[in-house]
Image (cartoon, rainbow, N blue to C red; front, side, top):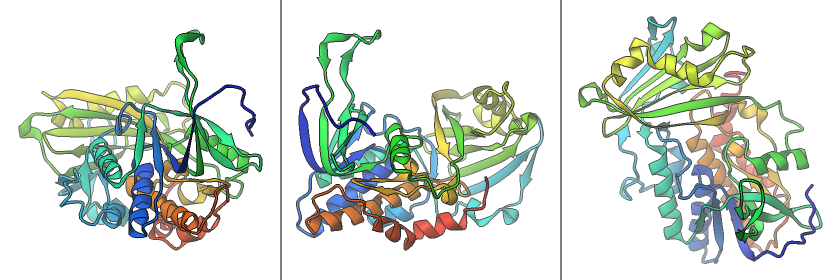
Amino acid sequence: MQDTIETTQRESMEVDVLIVGGGPAGLATACRLMQLSEENNHSLQVVILEKAAEIGGHTLSGAVIETRALDELFPDWAAQNAPLLTPVTEDEFFFFSGPERAFRVPNSLLPRSMHNTGNYIVSLGKVVRWLGEQAENLGVDIYPGFAASRLLFSNDGSVKGVITGEMGISASGEKKNTYEPGMELHARYTVFAEGCRGHLGKQLIDTYGLDSASTPQHYGIGLKELWQIPPEKHRPGLVQHGAGWPLAEHGASGGSFLYHLEDCQVALGLIVDLNYNNPFLNPFDELQRFKLHPTVRQYLEGGERLAYGARAITKGGFNSLPKMSLPGGILVGCDAGTLNFAKIKGTHTAMKSGMIAAETLFKAIAEGDPGGKDHAHYQNEFRLSWLHTELKRARNFGP
């Protein structure tokens, strides 16, 4: 556990709830907290720290989302112009057997979790920015450009907040004349929504032994590109998933995706399970090979790549979930590992985990809780939710 004694003089700020991370989980937490605050006429100060320069700045666009959590959080999301513009109209799954060959699996043979009827293809960055606007309209304070660098602990060992990253450090580690120490943010409760393998979340899991009753977490790396394609090749609403080549050629596992969004844009990518034992496998190179397959190339020829990126993915599922509550805080979303790999979706599950956290913490604060407690009954609320049912049903989908 980090030292609680600080010698550096820092500015500090006291809030009711601090949320680390401005993605779907963190924003859903904040929005639900402020909705409850308004419904119960109980004032709350809620702050989100987001390391990107703007909300959505580190979100890779192109995703298929299920609206179940969004329907609960904002039932009128369509009237509020949420950027869910492309309903899924076609589902295709291919088994790639080589660089020129592919077999389409009939939809009737696919598990129910792979069907996308009623879902939407979205720019996740736009959805996150829209959620950020809703949060600010509800009274949430969002601080973009501030990374949570270190944990703060109370004398009793509970989390009492974070310290933001220092500014004005040279490449050699020297303090420049523009140096500013990080700010301390103290909160009754801190919600950690950093995403997969969040650096503070990892420390908390280790410090409090939150994964002592869980199976080891499994990870993948997802590589994604966003393309502008010719209008005559665009099939808005088409969702394609695949397995096999090129990863199977190396004895590796994973899968591929290709989504036709609005505005003649396509998001495509490759997910590589991080258990491969071939030291020569390069996930980036495999994505470039995948793009040359005729099934994919037919859409990209004559197009232009607009953006690209990669991120880690938690895929251990239900059996790898840690205990999500801890003294003074809660882990939500991919910080806890709530992605449903059977559905290849994590946005709705991340949002729901944050909404449950919000309801748990608001009830405690409204009853006069001074903070610092381990609200283990969050686990009970989680077990009673559709989120628990969904993740448990998918627990044996893969390793």
